[in-house]
Amino acid sequence: MSTSTTQNLIESAIAQLQQLPPQQQQQVLDYIEFLAQKYIEPQTPQPRIPGLHRGKVWMSEDFNDPIPPEYWSE
Image (cartoon, rainbow, N blue to C red):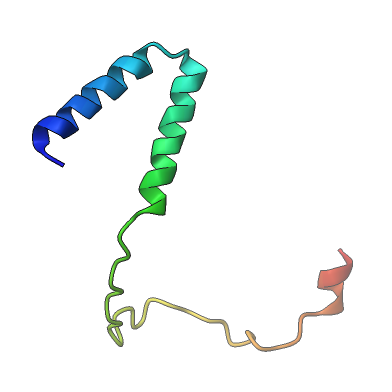
């Protein structure tokens, strides 16, 4: 589509949008956001970097111990 055609479409859409009540304007915006999400270009996942967060996680010594019964009864 040429730039002038795109500009004409945008201007026409804005003119029609301004004539709608606020609730319908919101519906149009919601639909535009839906279309933007539906046709988003998939991004190539970044490769993992081993050791990137080394030392940032802490786990208690009793992590794998069974949970005491009083935990479930309270």
